[in-house]
Image (cartoon, rainbow, N blue to C red):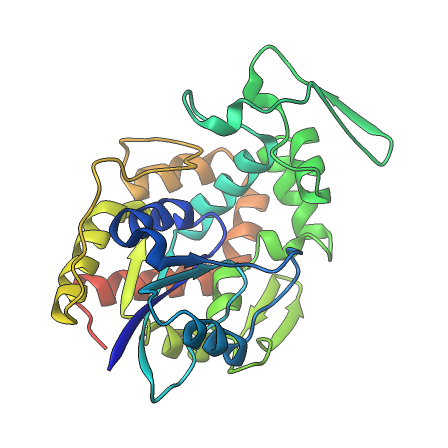
Length: 291
């Protein structure tokens, strides 16, 4: 049976880096696709049609496809997705929306000197990295606000809270061709965590942003078992907003330690499902999980 990789590109979870790995291995047999608008969704039946119309392709990537993977008697899906410590992911979103990128990142070289939206203007500073990465409402808020203020703003805003509360659980909790069940509570947004954990176990190519190279090498071993040659290129990281030699625990401690105590507790409570999901993913990978 035909084997295909479906890469579920979760925002700020190493998706660009993994797409480069797929392109390195499969070239034009790697298909990237998204709808014309960021709010579009591509359901499982539509993904099936895309896969069937590209019989030569080995890998497919999209920001807009949803788990669980499509079912087919014509091909076997090897789902690929990366998870990330929720607090480090949220900090990365804030940096990305502000346009704060390390030296050498091509997104520093944004052309516009002034970004204007809805009557608000933002002058570029001496460092090109201060240009907003986009002109969404989230980006405009991030550019005005330092991290703690932005977190509080998002937690208090019904439209923005999805950026900072259990976003990865939301992704994994969706049912076939359906949106995930959601409940708003004072602590944040809650989803069907047991459903998300079940779906997590079906992702054969499961990785973590914080352990990208090691987890991609493990994926290579899995793919070899399916008869798909796969290697890690010499350069693996792309679109990275922060490089650090500290451990995950050290990075999280430093990040949360910089927040006021009450806000820190609110943020932790708002992401307890995401933290449980991340910890389960770590367990699965460390146990050499196979579907």
